[in-house]
Length: 87
Image (cartoon, rainbow, N blue to C red; front, side, top):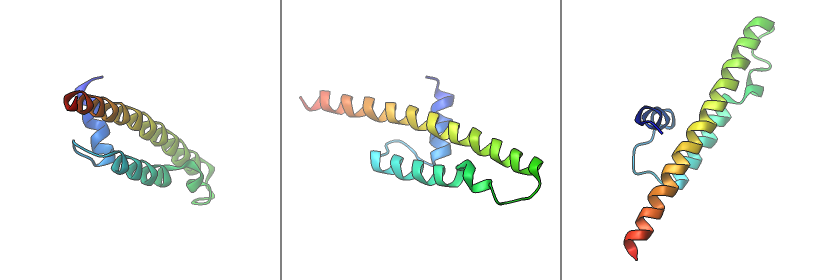
């Protein structure tokens, strides 16, 4: 995991560390709602423009999911560390 990927994921989700699981879930849901490819189905009758928008939405959905996985792993790691310090 590189620092750049972490920085990009935090920027995409508009979060800064530390963040909670609830904040992460809310941001993910909002981003997936915005970028779901189905939203672009009725925006234009031009097939080329539609496919461009659809492809962009697919890319963003993959990016959101990858960033979510990365940030979830960070959250799990941080939770594990905090439990270690409590014992």
